[in-house]
Length: 231
Image (cartoon, rainbow, N blue to C red; front, side):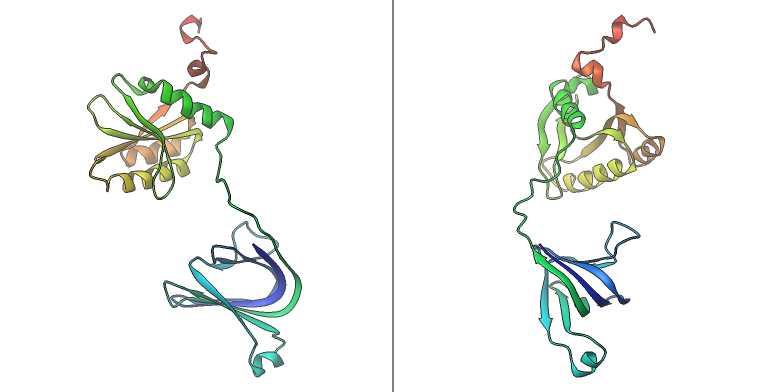
């Protein structure tokens, strides 16, 4: 990854146009070909960017641009469209490159990982007749936490969270759209399972035909014997 801090202006040219006037910004050039333009405030999101696949060309500015103070011009060309990100650099303040290596990806926290393992071992928690197909069922957009079959032999995709919110429902929706394209699995229905599920998430899940299940983590671990409670 290359990190460049520079005084620059940025123009996005293509299906839409956007202009960032001259200011000091952080430019990230990633190994996958993406280029992101960040400021020092406002949000974690970039001000503008070009997604991969893309090609970065660094050229000398034209005479008129030199007169305006431009010392270097970056043109980031999308490989799929005519969109371009044009960065006119007026001053380099910092320029370093770092080899980050292969990223292992997001690892769930201990509770979510335990929930996945425990539910796979106790799949009938979801209902009589359930059976496990596999944990971490791979798809092109990421792994489904658990893939199972219900008592009727239907395929069920299960997304697990410690605290279930709308983002988790949206994630499961994307998985279901993809899985239902596979004739060997379809029809696939979804279950959104968590220790706590926010009301808004339940409403969205219900609207999309996704069942919600609240999991008792302590009971699944054998820590809490619900049958022995007085209340």
